[in-house]
Length: 105
Image (cartoon, rainbow, N blue to C red; front, side, top):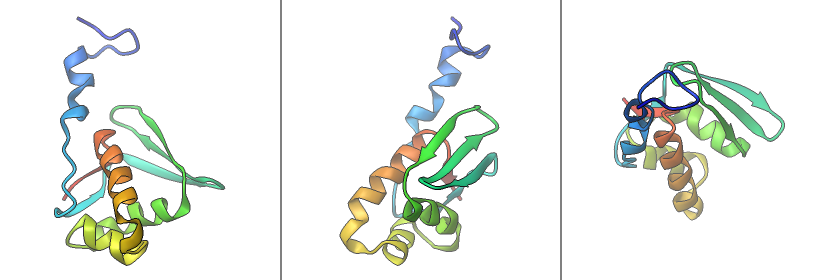
């Protein structure tokens, strides 16, 4: 069975949905993703799956850019935005992992 918007089988297109975000692991921006800074935050384009994702805040963009500098996503979150907003940014990173914008190092 083929997806109407792609030449790949549906099962391949849904592969990213099985990605589980674990904030205790080390993550980084996927090497196939380009970020373009915008007034609202940034656009993330994945050259592999051709997804375009909007990062709707500058702190989130900064967090994604520095993820690879930390031993865990939790450490990056605390250093970048603080503990008070950790849950909100963990949820945002989980969505980015599902979209394959970030991946485990």
